[in-house]
Image 1 (tube, helix red, strand yellow):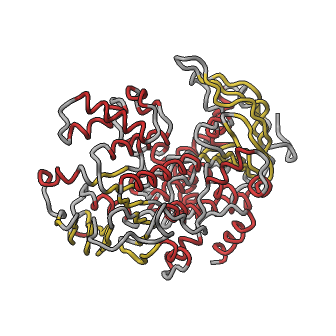
Image 2: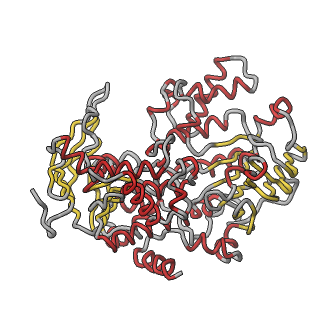
Image 3: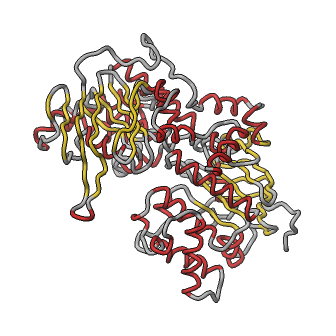
Length: 554
């Protein structure tokens, strides 16, 4: 069957997806239906576990062979996807429709040059294409997605690309065969606001130029507002609300949609003051808990030497929250790791409670480890998959000298309860939890030795808005009750404003602006800070379109 130009590009009717488990089938998608016309964009939004990615994968029948039971109808460009034979499905994937996955590192082969991987896709779907022509096409699409010096970059491997460049490379791979439909699963989740804006602007240009249809999976309602025509809100695998993006986000009918919108942090909203303090007010003057003076960190040698952090000075007072913001590669994570001495400074001074710690050896640092802890960005990679979450929380207690195993287990259970997890889950493994739950485990583990300072490296970047709100509320509660000081590293400027007393803006390893969070956000002085704030997604589609037009004009 050949689709006519007026036919829907995508037609989904009563889609249901069940996954078998030891405890019985789990229904991930329950009776979802929608249509997408050529050249239009649909946003699939909702919390983690709402079924967004499961629906997206069903559009290309990626559940085939996994044991999942998929029923209903899925038609793409007139083809019945669920009934298509393997050969036809192979032609559809990458040829007629292409998918961009959330994590580019897991989608790109680390051993092969990026250009070779794109060329391979082109040759598979365009039989008879010579290797030289396929390589030329790879360079062409890399240039199209904004990769500078594409001929040279085509020879580079994925680890030589930044996060934003890897996402662009995946887009180039998806576009190599000029598909009619692009399915993008959280394509901007781990990107800073400026790179995110560039990727979304690129998708808009591609739609305008080629009539590309887009299905965008995202938990960021601001991203959806500026990128799609219609929104389908999913909750527990079912449709909660569907309609034009301005209508759904501007005048939502479903209570669930209203809850999602209420949980979205606003970059233009003044910080809510903690109990007993004024918004944006720093803690009472006193000796800094942590003080960095002239910190510098270099990697490599000779001509390959790179300066990641360059002459950074800052202080963190007891019970204060200092936000660190900046683009990818600005030095945020490197600085955070130096503050907890996971990295040794190349130069500069680092003092904790008045004591120089920048040059201490590991044996001398051991007592300090209990007081200065880190919450890492990806709880999946920072938790041992072979140990239960309870053991992961109890281990720091044992390392700190707790010799009574029963006390360690009891304390670990108390910490799980403290961060909002059931203590009876002590014997479960990390893969049995959602992203937000794993992040809570990471926080519980960091709290185990009773620290005075937590350095949180992108603790909510991959979480949906409601889980994000829960984690930030938990950190605020812990700060209030335990007197914790926090260094909060994030690329989400709205979240940083909501939780921080002060903010420091990093660019190319240097602090370009610093001050009370409301002052910096309301009256940014440095052009770089102004650019970051201008790139933040907004919930109003008309405002988002205006900002996109201004970026295009610039």
